[in-house]
Length: 172
Image 1 (cartoon, rainbow, N blue to C red):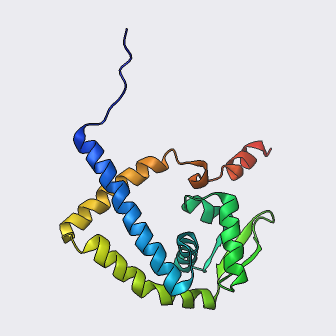
Image 2: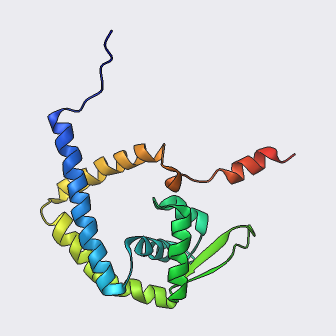
Image 3: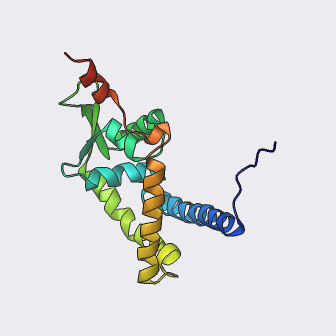
């Protein structure tokens, strides 16, 4: 009896390696631009952009952690670093004293405003320039489906916490 190992065909391997290389090249260029323009790491940029995109400019730390694939302790460190720079504030959550709410400051908005033009230019030059509008729409669909599939069984750093559900189940 033989146990056949799953394999990838040449096209699948090509897609995988192209995705990894393109992702690495783009991330490297973006990280360099964010560092040069705003002294931000990519994760710090993600945090600030996520906060700026929220209606009140605030989110609970656990919600921020669920949105990015980064360790919770690492995310706490990044938020502390942003707070020291005056780009965010951290306060106890009004709805759960165990949670921390992170809020972007005016200075945080200003740093984002300073990095966005270069950030958008890099995305345009490196990612979107060789693609047609139809290619971009197809890529958005394909990557969106792949991401959604992966999010169904995310790594712990990207998994929503189940604390609220577990707490509700224990309540009488």
